[in-house]
Length: 316
Ligand code: PEP
Ligand code: MG
Image 1 (cartoon, rainbow, N blue to C red):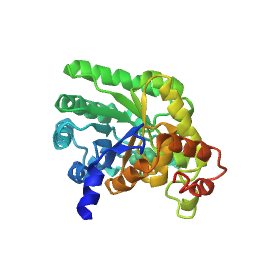
Image 2: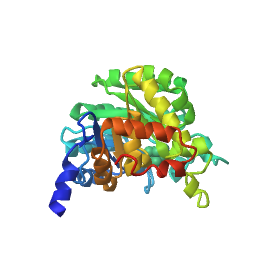
Image 3: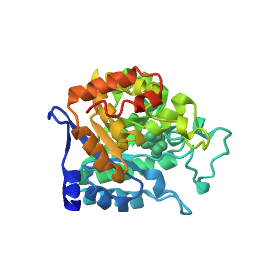
Image 4: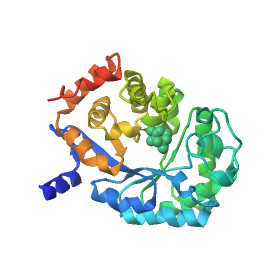
């Protein structure tokens, strides 16, 4: 039984009719987690949160240390894809030694790329390390908390400068879609990026105006809320218009019903905590693509997350 379950987890996530294959990847916070992710059935890493390399220490890892880390991850992945997200500091992740000014509203402040674009001393060593590592495997770079086209253009320019200086290979550049502005402007942003990955944790927080860590409101901060689903549908439409792929790396990707709805919405990659991989794969395999598309349409027309949750079993 256990062996059967383990081998099912290693199989690809294809809908029952064979019409759609979803790439199932893992979210990792530390390089040591890659081996366990592969064992759980991950086909790659869809989100490496590099801020964890900066936490619980007294100074920032330099370019060389980061390069060794990223290269080591590519080697552990042995040809499987790796999406590394640049530092996402601010909001809930604070780093004492960076001495950043106190903010009244850190989730609405200098967070993610807003910080990186102000701090070349953080951005450039990380980009150099990433481009040096890129010749050792299939690496993509992803930027957190993007909300404007101007940010995308500025980041691309920085990347190209670093790449050219190192004579490094071209690397796919993607952005997190986790601010409502990025979702609604997806058709414009898609022209300038290679892929999107929807961060449903932050997207839910920002579209419902509920702090993602709020103890009292936690039950209402459900990513399956139709307001979130509509933004994801808009993101997919914008990406499709330019032939870009869309993944989801927030918690919704690892929720079996979430994975089914996202597949129906046209998302083609799901990145999740390794422990969620078997359940999400099973959910995708349980229905035909057309059924999942109908499920997604019904979810978009619900009035609340609770109503969407009540659609469970609708695919059977
Ligand atoms: C998200 O916001 O959904 C996400 C994946 O990023 P993080 O949880 O690291 O903010
Ligand atoms: Mg986020």
